[in-house]
Length: 253
Image (cartoon, rainbow, N blue to C red; front, side, top):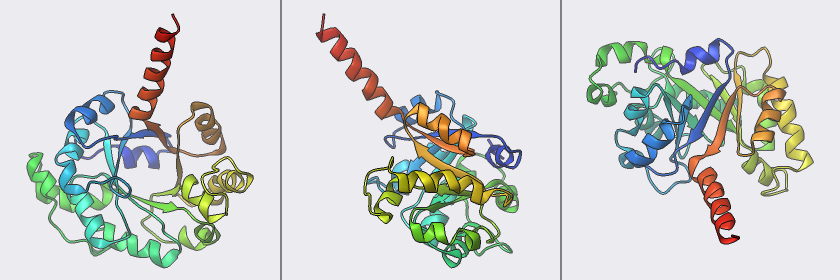
């Protein structure tokens, strides 16, 4: 359970594949974790629930050898701290625009001396782990994922990558469409050209390029472009596609 190997895999240059949690229930989590992802994306930005609703799901994920990744609603110390204290291995911070905002996220995510996060990871007590050991080694285990979701943020990449403490930069295709004036059109030339250039801009920085996609063919393309941290759709969407096909097939008999 501890330490989770996610950070080690990233440092070793491995590609990690995850998927998102469609609902904050033990049954949904169990079924998704059973598919064998490297990380489980728990979204607290756009979903109508927060840390109190996810309960022990991050601990459950850790017990299955999967890294729980919580996306917080904003670059806010209270939200980032609570996400890690709920058991997250990785925390994703949305809509970071420049180096100052990235530096602030690092400060919120790390214990001293790297940052100023307060000490009280109660998830370790629930999991039956040595709480003091978790606190002493948390900076070595936890992962900080910073989202790049606008043209401005992309333009500031050279400064953002100089900020120590960032493990992953996550290209947000959907929000980027709004930034470039092609809202919802993730396949537009403007977004695709930025996506292609993104891993190249991170080459040699030690920071892992990441994104999220649904179509397996497009995912393979982006992996070929150099992305090494990939969210692969979600079980509910994939399951509904299969169910729809099954219903259509049975009705056509």
